[in-house]
Image 1 (cartoon, rainbow, N blue to C red):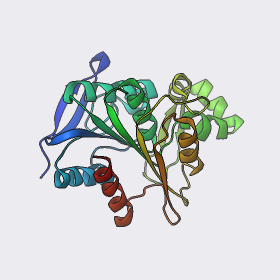
Image 2: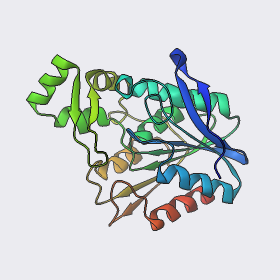
Image 3: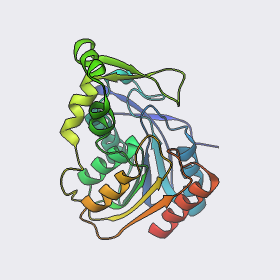
Length: 248
């Protein structure tokens, strides 16, 4: 049974929900994806895996997600990065392994850069840095761009939810402050990247580009030929757990 949900306070008095289990170092921190929450398959699987291995583990909801405060549409990459920093700074000491899924891969990279002296390893699962530019703005039609500029919001259909994603112009504009793939990424820890070659949401080349941009030489990419964006099959989760074991 999971520990009872608790809360910390992030910047601007944002209330961030989290679960933590105590164990040995390093502490594993999971950064979830866009509009996901800490009750997702990978977040819960990692908790069980860390219990088995004996590691400390934290999963949490960004502001505007899950049980945390604020409206989703008010969120930005910078705010969600700051939420992740608050979680790490207030709930952990010592070495870290950061695991980021999809958008969480971007947040996780930003978190790892900000706390590089503490981060032993980064694991990316279909990591999507720069997605507000490359997978949103650059792909949007002139009509959608006009709507965003005029109304501030675009309702984007999602195959993962009955409700459309509420994409704000602020999310896209603010994301430009955190673009990573156009220059070297000064991350020199162990890096493990997982990506499905049938990922229809985040092209698998994103993991290759991350590998080429980080300054670390200890980088391994694992491609699953049949894998989709979720990478939540039993085999995918088994490989994720083995990566944790190998990195400890």
